[in-house]
Image (tube, rainbow, N blue to C red; front, side, top):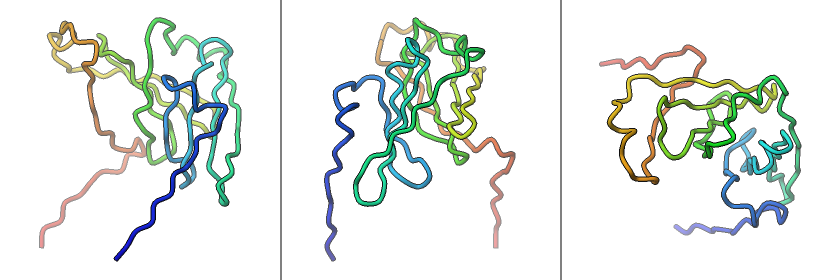
Length: 149
């Protein structure tokens, strides 16, 4: 068997930003979530790789009533997407109290979820690279059921 791999070039407009760009899946397609200007202009760009290798761009403006959810002093990292297509943003480095932000691209809506139960001594480490990795279940209310035969 053989496998062919092709390099995909990021859109030139986002390739130099680096820090505030995340790769996600959107509608079953590779996408670039560019939140470089989120705090300054309330703007988020979503670049989706279309059939044929062309990038399409959609610009989303955050609702003014949701700007308080994004702390200007905290950097955020894209941690992936939910099954519902919400982008998961988490603060870096690890801060107390810990939270994650869900950004629903379809509704252009954002919500902050506080995570409780993390031992307080984890936050006192002097390692700026310390991160909290997590796996999320979808918020749809469905649960996993293990069946034995």
